Image (cartoon, rainbow, N blue to C red; front, side, top):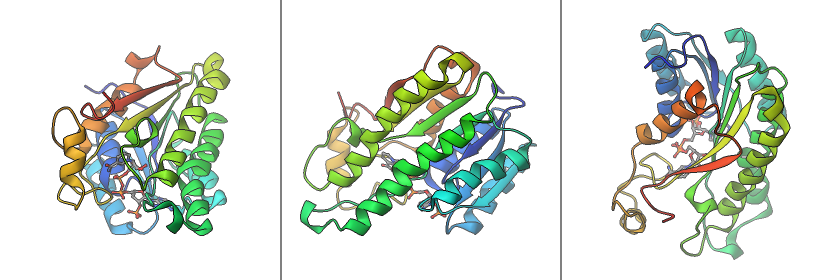
Length: 246
Ligand code: NDP
């Protein structure tokens, strides 16, 4: 425990779901943590209050990551508020699923802006100020590795792009001791994919363990990757998917 003492972290989309669990776990491990939100100000403030109750510094930043400026400035504001940045978790994401013919250009632009462009821009801004030992952990999806049926074209495209981002970041930043990794969650019980939703039974059946994952089961992997024990883990994908891709 307390493997991240003194570290400063930014978790995008840390107001709820997987991002909130990651923010709390990083704080539990000793990190000061900034979270971004776009609409959930109250939820983000509750996460910050919990971080502060652990004796750590917490900051909530409004940032609409569909906007390029916000993706960059969220990193700058987090580093300024915390006094530096050691860990970036690119977690914020949107899922637009549906038949190929129903996907509009607006959908394509929004999903690629939030899921891909923001991850690139935030990583670029973070890398510019990260010290040796820095970590960029990005949240992908099991859909980047295996698309089990129709309706996932745009979302799978956006998440698969993060594989290239992660590998190239590892090559770009390796000589500075900064590691880049990609975590692929399987079906995780959140607002985006509730465990009592219409396709939940089918998604559970696609895992080998036969159930949804909990947000904490993703957060524990991210905490490991953010810490010193993952010093030789970079440029790679890690599935936290209950066997979905097996
Ligand atoms: P939720 O929908 O529960 O939470 C999404 C988070 O992202 C919220 O904090 C939300 O902020 C933020 N967000 C959404 N749009 C924007 C935006 N335009 N700018 C900034 N922040 C934004 O999602 P999950 O927790 O389920 O997902 C987290 C990540 O995990 C995503 O990248 C998702 O693709 C991925 N994932 C999820 C899976 C699942 O089964 N749940 C499976 C595989 C991957 P706010 O509260 O302010 O709206």
